[in-house]
Length: 108
Length: 334
Image 1 (cartoon, rainbow over the protein chains, first blue to last red):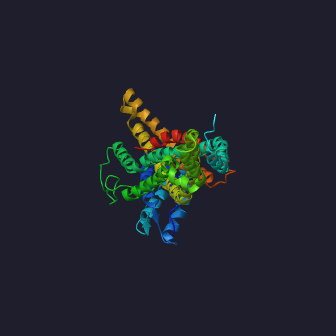
Image 2: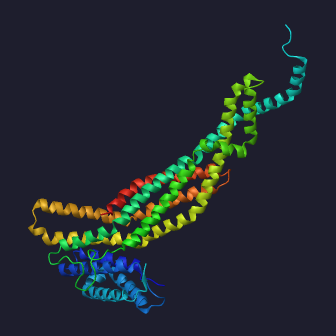
Image 3: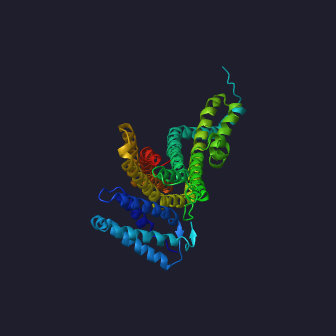
């Protein structure tokens, strides 16, 4: 059985909330970071107990995407310089993680 | 003055003297043993009861804090959800949102069944600590007679010898009945202490692996599920309050701004406390003390004082941790 990398996911959530209160980001984008952070946190709560069959490609892809987005957010200068792209990547991540709830084998 | 003892009685006394010498020897030996017995029985009585009583009390305190934490998880999520609604006037309160997902009001974020299972597991650990306490404080005197008959056969015989003498040939034997009974009782109690130690050792050895598994599971929960829950939850709450303040600040009076900022400060403190993994640390302290208890119980007589010292140190550290960490855990409890 495999699981979603919830450690990285929680880091991404926290970074979203940090950008939501970052004065270098426009108020509209701050609101978007806040909204995405809330959605990601909701997914974190659901996925933290979800288990998947070994080798489930959607999970492997989502974990790879989590690592990428986390790396993107960790570089604040680049993330702020390309906020629109960063937010787009986060939205894509939200969609993919949301889809995982339907393929989870069980929730413990 | 004629002798009050007839020649026949004199002969009987002569014959019985060796027997009298035997019980005198026994009694002298008993008197010599008495201080030693008191010394050892004193050690035996205090060896486990204090640390085990402390272990039980700290276990109950820790379980109380952890149970409160577990039980409050769903109300924490509801509070957080409603706070998000409160700071954004455009958001309605819902049980199911527009995407069809249940909100914390519509369905508990954490299954009540799994929360209850965790509380039950913790209560088992509490029962284990309570049972150890009961064993360490077995009422020895009420069980003395049977115990003495197992170990103290010779002492029992001696006691009977004195009781026989008391009403017959030797009136002065009366004076010795009390001390000898007391000595026999003390030695019997020593036996019980040994038996009690054995029972404690068995209970600890039998229960410890399961207790370790439960505590490791609780700590794993805290590290991988609830730690992430409270850290992200605190950060969400902080972001919500800051966003709300920044949006409203122009139309707020000074007092209102001060009140809002005080709320921000309190939430910032909560967010800082959440990073410290207080619930997990509390479980770790409990595990350390339990490990020290197992070591003390399974150690040889030679190493026992050292291990008991280790147990006391672990209990003291746990005591300090409970005071500090309980306050931090309560910050995360809503």
